[in-house]
Every structure is written in C-alpha cells, then in structure tokens.
Image 1 (cartoon, rainbow, N blue to C red):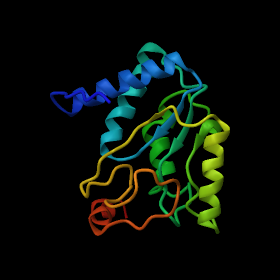
Image 2: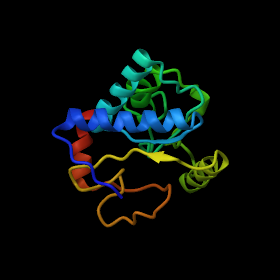
Image 3: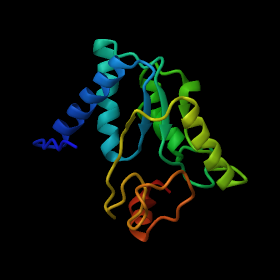
Image 4: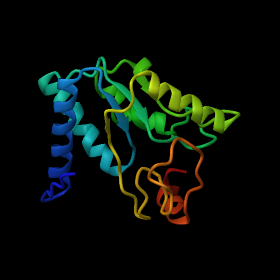
Length: 169
C-alpha cells in the first residue's frame, strides 16, 4: 500500500480522479466501486470535468455502489441512487444498465445481498473501490467494529452516522 499525502481536499479529489481516469483508460470495462458522501462529490465532479474536457469514456464502465438506505426506492430523492444520478451518472456517458445499487426496498434483504454479490462476480469483480471515511470512523458504511471482510448486508447505523445523515431526512 502506498500513502499519498496531499495539501488539501481539492488536491486529493484531483489526484483520485486522475488515478480513476488512468485505470479507466487502461481498462474501459472497469468494475468501479462507488461510494457517496461529501468527499465523493468532489471526486465525481473532477471525473465529470475529465469526461467533458478530455473525453474520458465511461460507456463500458460497470459500477457497484456500496450501499442504499433500507426502505428507500431508487426514485426517492434521498436515495443513494438519486445521489449517484445527480452527482455522477447524469454527468458522464455511462450506460445506466451498467450501474448497480442494492435494492433498499427488497422484501428479503438477505436474498438481495446475495443477488448483489452474484452480480458483482458475474462482471469479474470490482477493480477499483472508492471509499469515504465518516465522522464515526466508518469506512464505506462499515461502522466501527464491523469486519472489513464483511460482504453486502443490512447494517444498523451508529447514532453518530444517523445524526451525520439526518439533514437528508
């Protein structure tokens, strides 16, 4: 692992976008793991700018998001599906059929998790995963004390994470 220290958040978002762009150019059918949150907004903005300015091509890219709120339909403006459309998918030339998020309204969340994992395997896995770090210390909504080896599942959020996200509700 290599740790790259940057001067500020803007430098971080530019560097991450540059690294994602390099991977996408090397492998157009990149399996990109996506995250949400304030940090990601800057990264998605930078990727959108690279698409507009340099023609960075997302047409073959396949995305899998880390999470979705249980009980929210993809059409709900508070959903992560809506977030991804607003901040990323609608700003680049990605094929929406290649974008995947867990179904927060599934009747059987355990079965949905297994189906989601199967979809990831079907495309050959995730080549590059974007992750955010929350105020509670969660990494990609893996709350503190969660196993970093855990797979797709429903997860209760800590009070800190709930408070952090309450403004969206």
